[in-house]
Amino acid sequence: MKYITAIVFCFCLLACQDVKRPEMPANLIPEDKMVEIMTEVYLINAARSIDNRIIIEKKLALEKFVYLKYGIDSTQFAETNAYYTSDLGMYNKLFLKVEERMVRYKKEVDSLEKIRLQREEAQRKQDSIDGVKVDSVEVTPNLLQKKPKQNLIDPQEALLP
Image 1 (cartoon, rainbow, N blue to C red):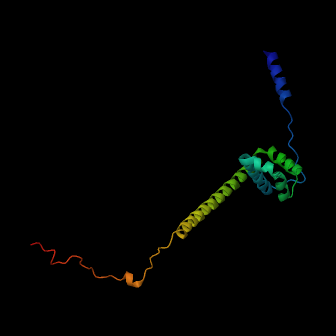
Image 2 (image 1 turned 90 degrees about the vertical axis):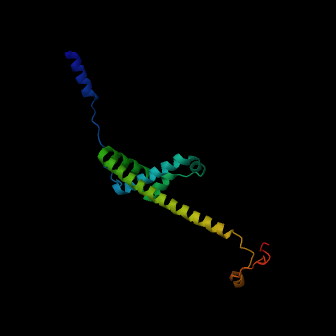
Image 3 (image 1 turned 120 degrees about the vertical axis):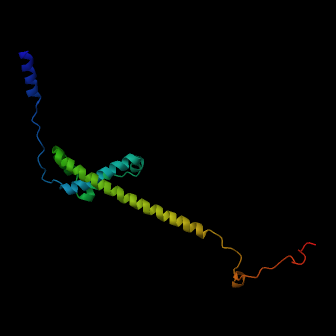
């Protein structure tokens, strides 16, 4: 039993590694900018999951677009991402900010969609009103005046004998 305990203890010591955190890169992307970049990256991934065929056909390099937009390169992004992922608390905080931005985007898109639908409905109603033919009978003031009722039956003839 002593030997088994000693062997398990040795395996535990050997199994433990000295995991080194990556050093902070000289060109570290600030947290707020990283949140913006990560939001863009998630939107790109969502676009790919919806219809990747169009992206491939048009030969769009969406990652390059993000790198150009934020003035970074892929190495800088990778190093910064590795640094932030080494601290789980910090990375979780970044993800919460990204999630918050995505929720705001969704609300904005939903409100814009609602406005678009309202405009389409108003246009549809206007088109149906415009499509109605105008009555061919011309209405004049004389036609609108009340005329006395005419008796079509002579009251004398209506009496029964």
